[in-house]
Image (cartoon, rainbow, N blue to C red; front, top):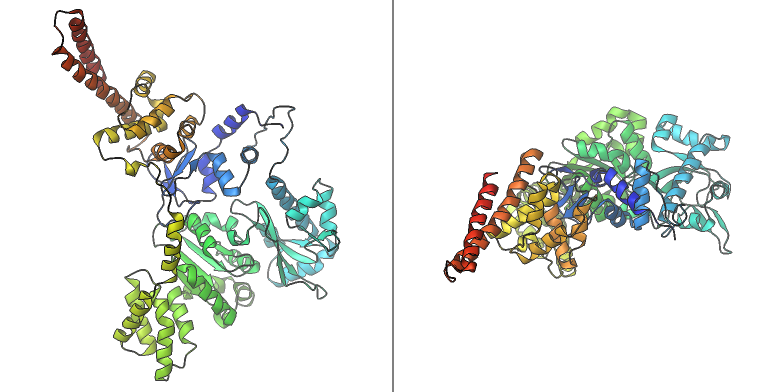
Length: 615
């Protein structure tokens, strides 16, 4: 089987800034000289512990221990093979790969690259069809919703023709097989095994992942004879998981991450996203045929980098019963945001698209000015189901709303909402507080979730920096290794070689030293190669050493500090040897050959130490 030439693998990695790749999924902030930090994409966390070192092409999470290079990241995030990850990065930078054993591209292994390519080709086919005479109904629909051709082009909107095999023929002519198109969700099959276009006679929106790759489609029917649902989405495929994608996030992510405060607006449909963006709310996103859930929260938190409470997530819901139910579902997850959560309901219950049509762009922007805190909104919806003019109705309302207030984890917010509830009901705040405390003692959903998952998340502890004893030796060795891994190219070669040849006193850090000493440090990515050479139980420790903050004002001071740390390691070894020799002086005759050799070595040690200290 053809393999990518190893020299090309290393060259592509050397030419790629890992922060650019990771930055498409995670909001990264400066975390010291040469270091970036964000919320980990591999586990849920509220404070950022995911570190990226662009100069080393390496990332490491101090929370879950995940680490690796740009290829590892793509393999983990997109479930790619190694070869596919190399090909993805090479394509991104315009690098032509060479293959061993024949020179042609390697055959597909998982087929994921073919699925991405099929969806990209389908998106182009649908866009072209929107300009055909058969698409008059689609163009009329878009125009009636306030979207001109420029808006359609910006969002990649297209048209699926009414025939049964238009897409099948077009993509088959491009070399895609029937099985590939079925796996991609572009074709459906009948009971006799025949294949036909899944989307027919519909307006089609491409659904893209956060990097902008098309992974599926959403389609709205146009014709009365269409017996299918009003909206039809791509089914679950190896690359499309509806609970892991937000429509419009690829367009919104830049403005979300740069906002001050960071703000996300969650709407309910494709046309609502379009309307918001065209009205100037360029941070709007929507779910794709599923309720807003925990995985959507995880995605948004990575983009927002919400390690503070300054961000805002605003949900827009219809004012009808379905909209209220959607708000309650969102509330069940909203406490997992660090950001503040709000609800905005348009006048007369209009969705953003209808609001824009009837009242213009300014009305859509003004919708956000009338947002209400999520807790307040949900409390009011709960109370609306009770006759508050009667004692029985107020008591029932209190018992229904108290668990909502009890869900509030912020101990500063909860008393305030207890007072809000007491005012809404006209009841004694003491009675309300008592009922909320009783509901809280029953345990919140979040606490039950955490309790149930605590055992599953427990694992045998691996070696970590925090587990090492807080001794001077540990500090010197840890800092020296970090300096070597991050600024080895700025350390005097002789000093570096001597440091790596000097045994460390901390066993775990000694293993890291041995690994670093054993790799070819002239090759790109040698830092990660050293970490990979460690035993599995020590790789997390090695990753932490590689990406941890190195205290220095800038690169120049970091290089000076790294050199000084290496000298301290060497001087420490010299002092240790001197101590042993001073003991030997007391045991051997001074005029013996051994005694003279000891004294000469002591003089050499003093001179060598003086040179190192004086440099």
